Image 1 (cartoon, rainbow, N blue to C red):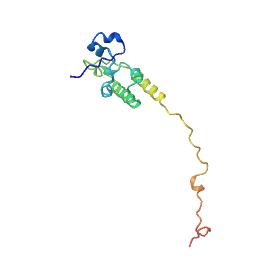
Image 2: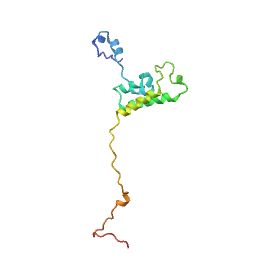
Image 3: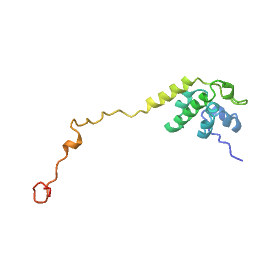
Image 4: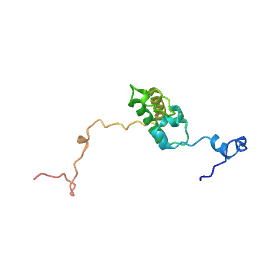
Length: 139
């Protein structure tokens, strides 16, 4: 049997007892559960972006999984919401907006590309001089 963690945010919850303290505390998100059924773990894609316990890559994978599920059976949304599932259909635009916000928030600064030479590289090669300092001669 696993011990119940009774540390809580508010002292009022502690006095309700260990079971109440364990049930009233926000639960941690298991990344695997979020990958398999993101709608069961999160109500809206914005919640994925705000969740601090996930890495950037995990957030991207969860949102991509959610978008894939939304597009899988577009003509029959009832197949996406199986009986007993807590998920409600989320518009694909909301998921794509969350993915775009994730990308914009972590985009590296764009540095300008080095200028390309105006003369092709073939014309800039120089002949190597031989050990005597003279140019090589053909026989």
